[in-house]
Every structure is written in C-alpha cells, then in structure tokens.
Length: 193
Image 1: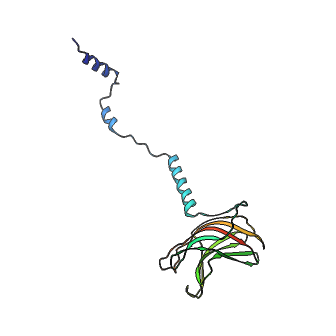
Image 2: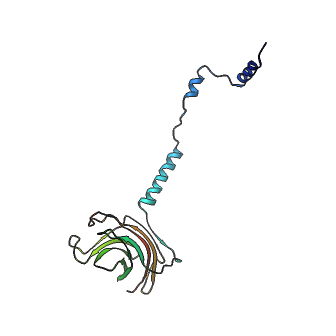
Image 3: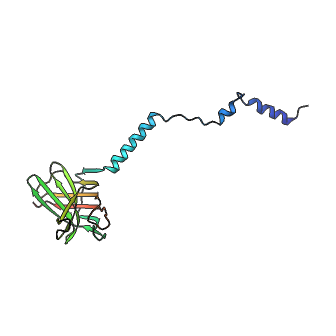
C-alpha cells in the first residue's frame, strides 16, 4: 500500500523537468555577458557631459527680463579670509570696449571685471594701494568657473547693466592660504562713460 506522503512526493517530482547529468554544475555558474556598445557609449557621453558641464562651465546667458536693484556680490578677502560684499562699481570706455569693475572701496581687496566688446570677457583681480604683487598694484586672472546672466548684450552710455554672477577664481598666489574665492551675487551698474 502506498502512503499519502509518497503520492505527494511522486506528484512533486513529476512536475519538475528532467535535468541533464551535468546540469547542476551549469546552474551554479554565473553567466556573464560582455558590456555592449550601448552602455559604453552612454557612459562615455555622460562622462563628457559632466566634464564640460562642471569642469569647463563658462556660460554667459542674456535674459532681457532680468531685474536687479543693487550690486551685492558675496566673496572672501584674499588676505584675511573674511567674507564681505563687493558693492561698488565703475566703468571705463576704450574705443569699442567697455570695462566694468565691481569691488569694495578701500586700500586693497579683490573684485571682478567685465570687458565688453563683441564678446564678454570676465576677469578676477586683486588690488592694493602699493605695488605689493611683484611690483604691481593690480593683478588680473581668468576665473576657473563662471556663470553670468545679464540683461543685455551691448551697452552704451546711460544703459543699465543688471545681472547675476557665480564665479570661482583660480587660487590666489599672493594669499597666505592660496584661497580661490567665490563671487556670488547681483550686479547693478549704470554706464557713465
């Protein structure tokens, strides 16, 4: 006589597929497939995107609807590493070029300069009241990163420049700690020259 447990066991075994003699070895192996070209291409494209987006991000955006009311750019002093605001601006007209500088009034500090011709060039600078930087009182440098939004592309006397800036300077060699200050804030300047 066959027991009920034996019947259930035979039914369970009958529903399982038959295995080949070396099937247990194959089932234990992990089957790997080489990464396809799609994944490599996607990875390469994403890597390039992030390098250009964050490594070489130097953008100037023109937005005619942009409005600001004052110059207030937060930065760090190159010498004493105190945070303060750049709240003063001046401009100078040279032939077909307008140079607009944003800085804090005083005997020394750091600031930014926009040089506007057919293109817009951004410079960061440090200044002192005497020739303390290897015989110079002002030293200019190209920023390592910047993103600037301005209200116009071309300016004439009487126009108002308004903008938002985000700039990261290269390390300042004349600073005791070789800091690389950030400049973050708003621009407002009426072209006088």
